[in-house]
Length: 123
Image (cartoon, rainbow, N blue to C red; front, side, top):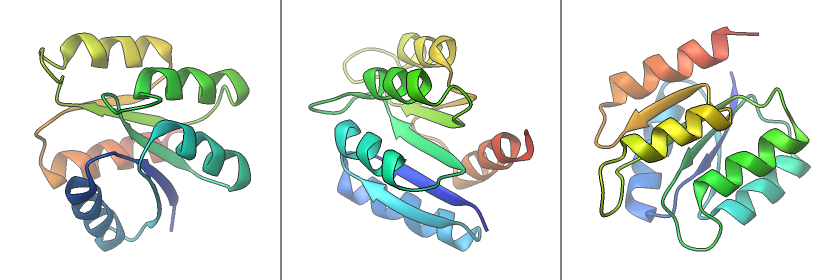
């Protein structure tokens, strides 16, 4: 069983992702925004972080930057619907900053599961 930190501001989507990840056999800890997520990462042991990019307060790009700066080997999946623009530019930036996988919303739970498996199977 892997321990996953899920950072997502949309409570309905976060609940849906938690249910899916738990059904896949993972332990999930939730954060509703980036600063809280970084704090949780510092106090726990997580195999993977899944973070949204467009969030109020500390958004996902800053969250990824802080995590990678302190923990260069952190495994991160970034996800985004793009807000008012397409998600591609945000997701490409997240990848350049250290996200191992990227997911454009909407995505299927199969796509999520495959991304999680790919990231967890490395290292």
